[in-house]
Image (cartoon, rainbow, N blue to C red):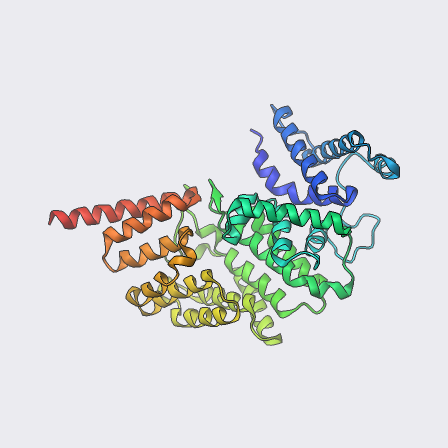
Length: 415
């Protein structure tokens, strides 16, 4: 059976980058590629062609040319495009001496133009390169989908109206855009490691793509900033746990219950080495602090040996450097692990207004209530988390927790 969804996730960013390079129009490229995938769904009834990526690129390119013809934007550009090959997308550095050595990374730097607000830069790149849906991006920003859709429309209009070229940034521009590029790679990795919705907890291809692009970014920037090294370290350390996060049925396994023999020790060794390098060359920024937290987890041979006081201290410092409700929630959970749920629960409940629509806030609150023996309250919080969650493995885990709390409450009532 043809898995178009997997092909979409694996090839969207590469194909879109090649189409934008050819046509210089984000909307035209995206619409043509969407039409190509729709055509594939209709025509690939038995099997995909041998060169599926080439087929999709050629089909999207033809759809874009057809649209240009219908709109009568022919000029010399159409004649130039018509002379190009109809086969595979051009290689990233074919016949070019690129500053940015990868087509997708080049597209990220284009999206991260300083003429756009930072959040718009990040959102547009997640949509074009990462292939994330508007809903997934909205969840990453804790925004309504409608608001995010409007932001994406405005960003693409700004690129078009300002004549922002799809081209390599100058060396002088690289540093100005690096912060936004790192934010994009971080969010792409997060969506891969903990998918916002769908049947799988982990989207492996997004994790691998984010790590690959982070490596390219470190190679591009000489010397690489300490935060770029730290970002790569963070990805490697977190991704090292990927195979232990789910069981054979695809169900969620909490960090405390994971088989640490399944953690990727080579990735951990590389990640820790990068953390050391990053912290040696510069003050710890947000990625450096998060990487240090991941390293503390990685160094614990068993869950009971985890240095939770150190993790709580690192989260406190992270909240000072880059404050956010999510960081505050993570710190509260770490405090609960270090000092007990009775100490952590008030810190979690302080975030009710900021994170009331975030399913993991309700899940964290429920877990602390459960550990305090307040099973009925825990069940109510788990139910709210279940209602908000969109990822099926998470929903199954929360459903089990609800059943456990309900059973415990019922047993207590009977006695």
